[in-house]
Image (tube, rainbow, N blue to C red; front, side):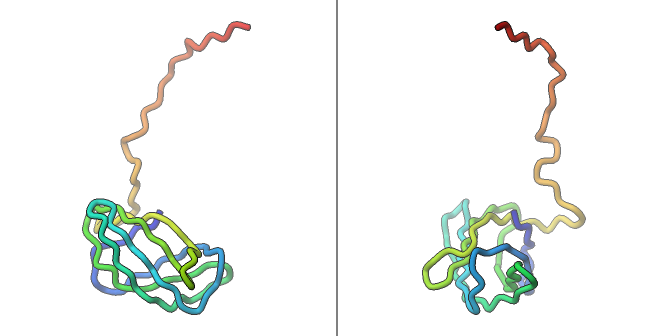
Length: 108
């Protein structure tokens, strides 16, 4: 999952695509409102990693579905979460509960 901010300044993120085209269309769909925004971007490459940079206009606390396309074929799909929280962001903090129950008896 990619973490981005609400900033209107250009932000960059890395993905591992299944193709390395010179120009891509980035489709970002808000999962709350189902509104899709499409941008044409020129990626840069570092080894087998595609680096996309753009201004996205995201809303705090929203999840987004992201699809990178070239010639109407998806080269990458993923999710984005938007937060302005600084530092390392842990999306699962406090949601995992462990159990020490050892009453699992298996009879054969």
